[in-house]
Image (cartoon, rainbow, N blue to C red; front, side, top):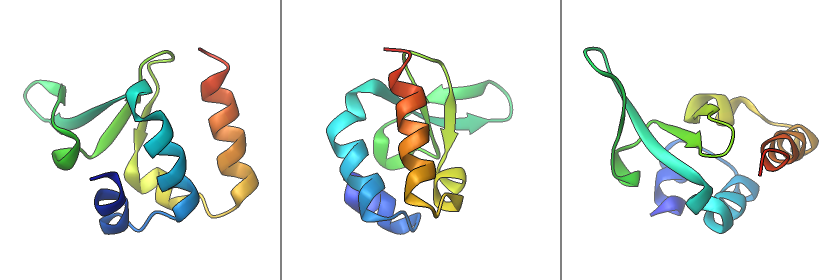
Length: 82
């Protein structure tokens, strides 16, 4: 599921590998204009909320990260909350 979702959103293999190993640390979300962010099944999500920090990651933001070291820095920052 993660591989397919990330392929649709054009995310690289490093991101797929990280999120496969750590998906339990994230909550899949979608934005509803009436109720705000709502929890949805992973296949229907547009965002991921890091449970420990509360940060919400947009798939478009993850797609914009093209430098591997920038992604590693993001992961390190999120893991510092755990």
